[in-house]
Image (cartoon, rainbow, N blue to C red):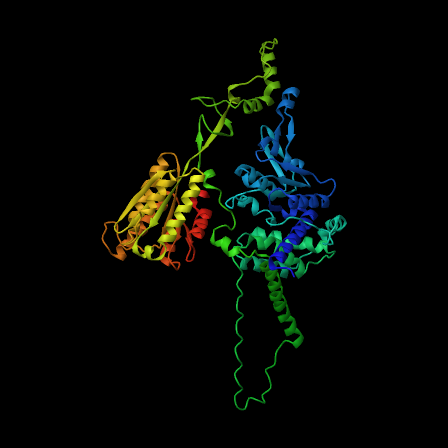
Length: 607
């Protein structure tokens, strides 16, 4: 007898095969597949299966991680241009993959620019090129397989790319992929490819998919659009020209379920009012005449019942595919776009002489800036013939001229970027209400987070507040021993001077920013302010001061995470988080380790 875990793994294998089959029929219409998997037999088998189901002539191109724009987009072929004396265009990978599949290796580490260029091609189905003197448009109808090879749980594909890919597969725990029992082969997929243009999707099924997307908390309209296309392809694979509920259920399971941000809630059906008993003397009265016949009334009611049943079927299919740990993922902030490790997330700043290359721009090399030689030659190459003719007209073309004529307007300087250091400021509520509820868990969570920051070489600071003061317990440092010592000496009890704590956090964050670092604030409190800025008790004045400090924090622009540590989520805490434009994370039931994982997943310094 198989266990529920075995059944769930088998369902994931079946979904992987179904996704490969649907994608192989028409890759461009579905955008692509996001495949979270390390290199292994399951991933290799799936890629081999997909490639075998594609047309023999379909291009299959692999995009390396640090691909240059010239190779990705195409542009001016510098060597051929210099040899020919006229502009020679080079075809990039996106143009070469027209009608095929683009394989993105280590897609979770792709630069923002590369993701944006691939997303534009997926949207338009063509590559619009306007660079280095080359202007034009090339057909580029392609599909994408994005390989997510991240090792850390806080790494993920860019949301802009995920939104455009129909399927999201996770091979964690899978050791094999086998399509021998699926009944799908290359001939069936080729036949579906021919039949697909004739397949129709009834409006009732589109409404059912939209209803399912709303029930699962999916905000993107593109998800419903991709699910509709997947349903049409499923019908074509089954040899039908009219999609039905089963096709919509498959599309809902493969496209909508991985995008779910909440569990569906069964809406209670409105109760039918009981009919009042007839009045005396009315029992024998004839029923009122109706202008419609019984057949017409039945036909009027039938579509509504069918549509509701159809929506229930599609929603049930999506709900069955939602992973069992969705609630834990949502509570940890892991849905949608996951954060990157904070050691990689400091804000980028422009630099003149140090840093990583980030392209080039026109300009002269001054103040130690570097000349971008290749970009300078690219700018000069298209003008060589005209410049030589100009020299001949001036009588200076006697053979002593340089082989490459470079002018001042051709100069390009290298753009460099440096990543700033990240400093996370933990603001811990040690007041009486917090100490009574969650101070021990907050201390334990901060210790775990400090250890995590130490591994990534981030700087940390700790501010504790209780009574009438907010105290800087630990200035920005990388010392884990000092951090733990400062937390161990933090007593609990007294009032909640929340406004004073926020003012202290803002001043420290401003000082960190002035040093060229990226500050992030993690506020752990129940939000029940009862001590004002002047140190006087009084809940009304304290709450007003806290609101003013929250607005000041919002104006400062510092990334902030508000962790509500009260036993039950508080409306006042949510209001404060909104005023300071902070990410609000209520954690009514969690130990130190769960609290640490949740904060690490959504901490603003990581996003």
